[in-house]
Length: 110
Length: 123
Image (cartoon, rainbow over all chains, first blue to last red; front, side):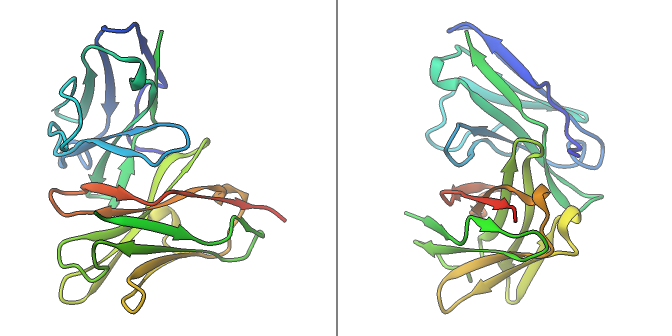
């Protein structure tokens, strides 16, 4: 049972802005940085955002991350068809001493 | 360029031990900067971190609470690889298993992943 809660789905038309929430607690998001991963079928997950709001080299700047208290968000500005994938937040939980993933959100491009 | 190549059986019987290996090229399992992780993905449980090993003058191991009593992750410096052993498996352990490097550029910076291995637990 994941300790980070995400909406199961989100959708938008090409060019729209989509936002995905990730709700946690004081022992994970509240006290750790947040990562976001993009998972396409038949491929390994890809690090999309690290340190809550930083993009690894090669990740388009239409992806952005933020955090407030015990919640985090991933925004996709200017949605593109290739963004259709599952997205997971993740953070270190200092109470569990576990690296915990969110429940995952499937993004559909309409 | 770092590459992680996974190997191991795709079918394991219930109550037996699941064993996978992850061969590293382009880095060292004994790196003082990286950490070596196992993560799995299943439709019912999503992504789940299982554990890691890393070397900082000595070897360290961290395991997820959910599997702590059944798991071991072992580095093999002679082969430059690390392995996952999960014992007493049940059908709930059916998943795609990934090895992944935390490159150390930032906390939990999972920058390189293995290709994934679908492991089915079934008699």
